[in-house]
Length: 112
Length: 112
DNA sequence: GCGTGTTGCTACAATAAATGTAGCAAAGGA
DNA sequence: TCCTTTGCTACATTTATTGTAGCAACACGC
Image (tube, rainbow over all chains, first blue to last red; front, side):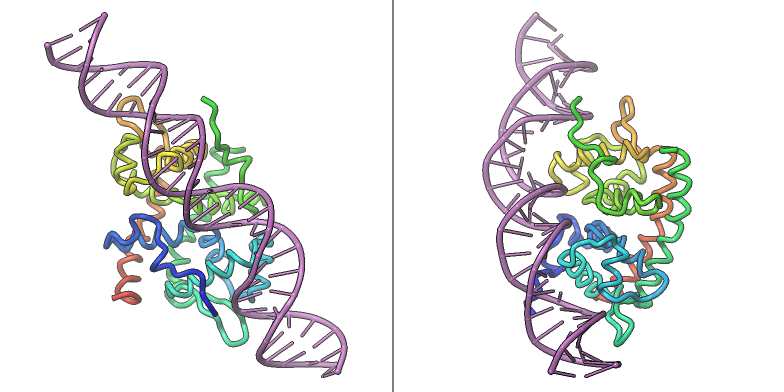
């Protein structure tokens, strides 16, 4: 036990301003948050599989983010399939899908 | 001069995997990135005004993120109006707008 | 020219967060 | 029982962020 992370108590400034968008931007702005949601977009993953998908990110952060995301209601730990998106989390992920196409266009415009 | 940050050299793992979405998720996942884009969504802001808008975040990070976002091509420093979104940045911001409505729904479902 | 105020931006010490490596207990299969 | 995988944690090292202060450059009124 002894959860060392609690997204409601340890907030980046501005996330408790009453504007839910700020709280959302706060959670999403933490490292690996976006990535985790992205990796979970298709199917649930076990914690180990997620770690692999996230390029061997340290289990410490992954676990912390997973806790954040679970408390936010975007992710849940299933019985057998590991971590997966909730209905809400799937909705959020849908919101991010256009980002994929944007990223492609972005590369073609900036890098090469 | 003497930029102390270079988003291409100091990357979170996985951002150079050839998948532009990863690079994008990386930049966006740094603290204050999303917030800055959000605050700039309507009109350009001077660095000081942006600092105020971002709840007095430290100028060090703000400057670092501004450099990142500028190098990514999302933000530019205008002649008189301060920092503003580029066309690309505006596009990216459009992508995020649905997040606003989602955040509202999210609050009503989770918190209160 | 001289103050006054703004701009973008930086230094730097203190604090918080992330990384990397190791390992735990519990559950399942053979 | 032994072996493997699960979710999850410890902890020391490294990196990022914070907070406070301040710089040079430019514009304003005078």
